[in-house]
Image (cartoon, rainbow, N blue to C red; front, side):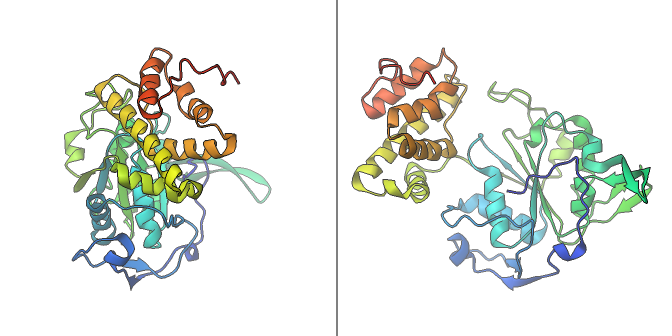
Length: 336
């Protein structure tokens, strides 16, 4: 994962980046489906290319949307509930294309100056001088880099208008601070992930999300929705991550784990729960079970203790359905 610190200057040499797209990719072999898209990749892996997760399972529709972004310079937004792996999906496609990829989380603290750049005091020839330092957006725009804006619908208005300038494929970025106009690199790519589709928090599930200007939404050429995986697919992924569960008994345990995760997701969507088990949570639960050697205690430490006290009886009921044990009645093991 290449999460970028916006406080540091992006002072990277040109040779850090690949030069041209030369390697053709067989989509069926790499991603598991056929497509008429011409998929090219960089030959060499460089610093900002994400690591490949060999066990990663690609969603066909979402992968095609992301590939369109990389191969045809489309602006792609991936929308879905949290924990569905939106950003990871983009990263794993980038990893197989050897495409440098950085992620920027657009929380409420990220401002226009963080993205564009600002004056900073630097030391030159033993003297302190003021110098304009470019932010992550101008740096990415000038290089063969895919930038992913996480939590896009939580971004501030001033940040949204900066990004709007480069949403057009040929969109140039004007830096008024140092009188420059930056033309995008031919292999610059722009992606975003969001919990909503620009309408704000209409469900009450995502406090802090903003309504996005529809003129800006219209500039996103592709919007794809990524939902949770099927139970069977999720079970396979968890077993691949925690292979000691790859036994008859272990598979039954993983099946029950995924079932309770599904119940929490349904409860989250219906408004009964404010916390949800993502696939990442289930993997962590399985790993903690190995460490602690107690599946009940591992569940409490991994997920149950994060739940609102008013909602814990509901989660306990889910657990009883799947494992036949009531967490609320189990002797207090978790006062740690």
